[in-house]
Length: 135
Image (cartoon, rainbow, N blue to C red; front, side, top):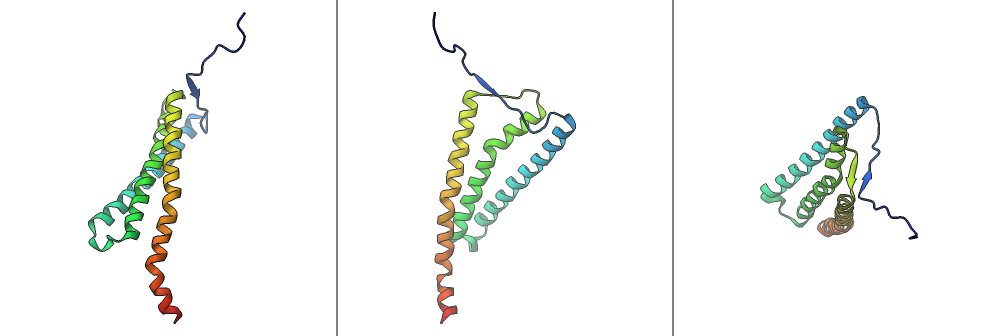
């Protein structure tokens, strides 16, 4: 007799935030609106920086990169969550879960690693102002 469990996990069941259809519609509309505002706001920042020649400085370069990473970061989880709110299929395959976790950690790490670069650029740009103000 062979010992051990012979079952294999092929998908995960997602519980979600609510089981009531009225609340699911409200949550879908709320999260979809926040996703659109986030995406369009970051896209507007990228377009404004790329089309205005006065904004072609290192600080705005890092800000546009941060906006792009933010778009990618929110696009890893929110579309899947939105599709789960409107569909009756509440499962995610094992490979899809691993892919989503990989990109979530990847883009989250990019946000955390680019923040110090952005702050150092801001400090570097405003150092002359501090020395003039102190003297």
